[in-house]
Image 1 (spheres, rainbow, N blue to C red):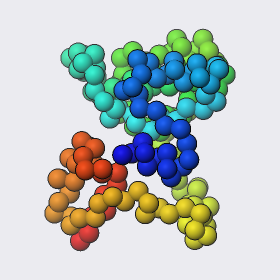
Image 2: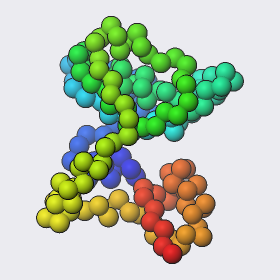
Image 3: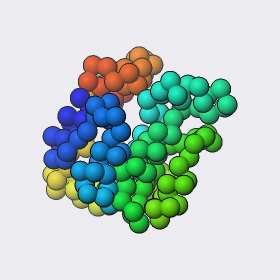
Length: 164
């Protein structure tokens, strides 16, 4: 549902990483050398594989597979933006791929305050509709249930708005 929504709303190509042995290498091949910019918005909340579960015995929580995938798909001398949240130390950070290919890694949460005037104007002019992603509106007392639904990607849940 989320991929279909992104495709429809943004008029972009979408890929489900589960349909590829290595989506990073696939993107690198079909773009003839990699993407100019790769933006990771997943962070450590990405799907936990059995490999990651074994690593958690050493204290790591979550996965850094999105970073590894990004290093596979980015073009030499270009940029990876890590907007997804990585809150704990990560084993297996692909520094060797980043270093040998002269890739710039920028990290941190989006500085949205600087974009607010432009975004507000776009909403006001009807260029974007921020309510487009709201799929559920429920009372606050259902917050726990809705968090689970969102996390499990159930019932087409993309964005939840809580009502008083």
